[in-house]
Amino acid sequence: LGTMAAVVVEPISIPTALGDREILDVGVSKLNLQKIDNPQRSLHACASRYGSQTIRSIFEKMEQKDMVSKFEELTLADNNIGDDGCEWLLQGLTAKTTAGKTVGENLKVLNMPRARFGTPGMKSIGNLIGASNSLENVIVSSNICDAAGVQGEFCAGLTKNKSIKSLCIAACRLGDAGVVSLAEGPLKSHPKLEHLSVQYNRLEAAAAKSLAGMLAVNQALRYLDISGNSIGAEGALALVDGIKKNKGRLQRLSVSQNEIQTEGVKAFTKLFMSPEGKALIFLDLRHNNLPYKDMVVIRQDLGKPMEGPEGWMLLFGERQLMMNR
Image (cartoon, rainbow, N blue to C red; front, side, top):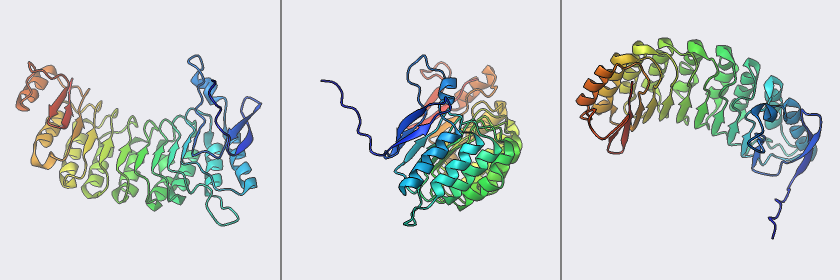
């Protein structure tokens, strides 16, 4: 017997960027427009399929039906959504039905990495975050918005929001200025945000110092990922001080690929083994220009000599410390 086709609940006809039309079901809880149908299909082909006009059409059809979106998870990754698409997304999800309900009141996950938007688009996403009481997971990585993208509207929206638990804003070229705006603004007091990723954002010591100041007072953050930046030993020492003042709330930290060198690695391993760092159950220090001879000494001090059975992952009960050259 053949497999039965899925029942279409709320079909709509939408235009694609390829000049044709497709049927989408907007009566589902998960809408995924990251459609790569087979291994031979490229990301470029995926990006060329849907665009801002698709987003506009989806919410125009919902307005005609006077319906609240059932979307709990919206994946727009690797599509050419652009700044205009972000604005249509904002308008569509924050619109009201005739009964006064918000169209996007059920949305929990917004997955938009590599959606080809910039500063204006990120500002629209910030306004959407500020208007939402349901969003829990937002991924907007690899959309080049620079510091201006997260300043102003984005910071204001994140300050207003009380529901987000995870924010991935990696590889957006935020620089120190962008992260300083976030760390000295909404990140200090957000009541629910547990996970923050600002990987590959061209961050240096100034950003690390602002994040350290944030950690000293933040009550909610449990996982911070700043991998792939250049905070150096100066930034590492600042973060160690911030974690001490954090009083054990942060549990996971990745500072891999940050050029913290021997001084920074030593400071972090000393923290990890101290009473002030006992709450850290995951610490990634890999690829930080640590000379082999210094790694031998540090491993010996940790009670994990190089001739032991462990490689770059060192286990301390259920705690993990990752370290290599």
